[in-house]
Length: 626
View 1 (spheres, rainbow, N blue to C red):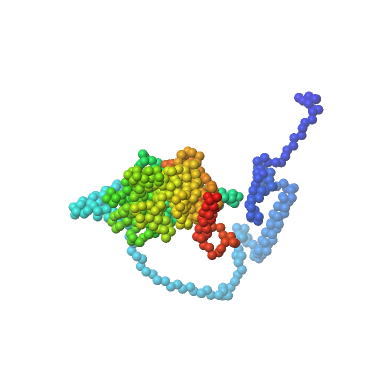
View 2: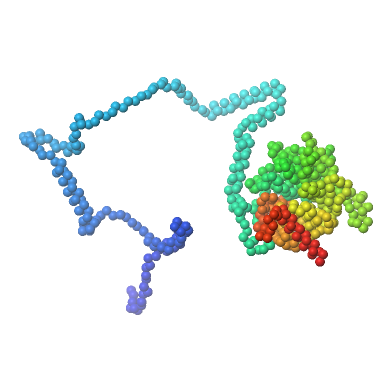
């Protein structure tokens, strides 16, 4: 019971809003007219909980009256139709009611027409031949498991009988191997066409799986370079790996001179206490999941080089002093040439090999340098590999210190790197970097002495490279934390760059005479180890334009520029699943030659590259003079 006081209280009104809380308020539909997605602001608040179509109508309703009217109209039309078709019965009714004929409601409704008035149909004639059917026979049977077993056993017994007869007839095992080889060659499953088809299919699957990375590699450009004058970045693309290369270090990288997407990577170890076998992997940008070719070596790989005219021939130098020559097209994984003690092989690691561009000798030959102090020339003859000693790297003492007589008895200097001049007028010249920190200029024609010795580094020289555009300039990288730029006509360095860590490798860019990349290799885990430094001396001759850390807790060992694509490839010593990193250069890092309205149109790109370097040399000379 409510009290009077409760009745006097005002009750707040309760309003029901016809809104559906579950209705979607952000419905988006594609407008084909405007060619974009648009939000539909109209929200359908109606919710049908129950609906059923009824069949019962009220008699007084308009719908029922209309329905009765339609039925009456149809009934009237049916009566009029029957009256029109009725026939008058003009006969006397029979006396017996049973004889009254039953009215046939089924009458012929068709109009009568006389048959004589119809036209005569044409007679169809057919012409055919008949032959006797071919004889047929029925063949059927049932197959059980024991019948199949008996058939296999009979074939095995027959094969044993044939094998025993071949042994009695004195058939050699070589013939058996040849027959098996012919059988496998004839099998389409193991044919070369099948292997090629599977390789193409694997590349398609890999490129579809890494579609975004391939689009970044081919089309993406870093727009932030437009707002950063003189600075650039490196975009990581792929990381090559191989199960056979685990727990090994990248000791050399070389791009193929003919196939721009193929590069060879050598795996070994720089720790002389942990030496083992080596691996050579040839990776392709068309399939980044698995190497195209894999070769195993008895010792760690230290160096390799592709032949410039024969892109399938690969020269390799090992840690034990052996040099090898592979043909990647061969089915066998063994080298086609190998040095031995009889051919005067090196006794220390072969740190670099390089094919000879001069083929005037008539035979393919390449050079090698080793820690044993010898530079050798290897000739590929018909059935063997022969060597010729080009130079012995003699130790040199500092002038004026009295060390010249002592070093002549100490032995030979350990060679770590060398590079031959690419210009045709100076093709006989080559540079040698040693463990003592000296760089020697040598000639193929004079094997007894150095043409010049460059002193500036205080520790081992790991890399020395001629400039691909300017014939007088070369660059060197050393463990003393410096990269130095030299003019081979001057004994002292032109420029020196301190990277605060040991530099493992340096490489000139193939598109600019003033651009090079260097990597820091020492101090694993340090802030400056594992960093790629890119310099463009025409933009900034005092500092790098890019310094980017590529790997963590590891040091980089080698770097190489691609000659046709805007990418570099670097290797590390991590020893894990990923050892080789591919990086794309941003637009600021790959500036070629810039032509303006004031540029002479008669100048070629090569002339402009030389002008860039000459302008740099003039500025450096003026600064030093001042």
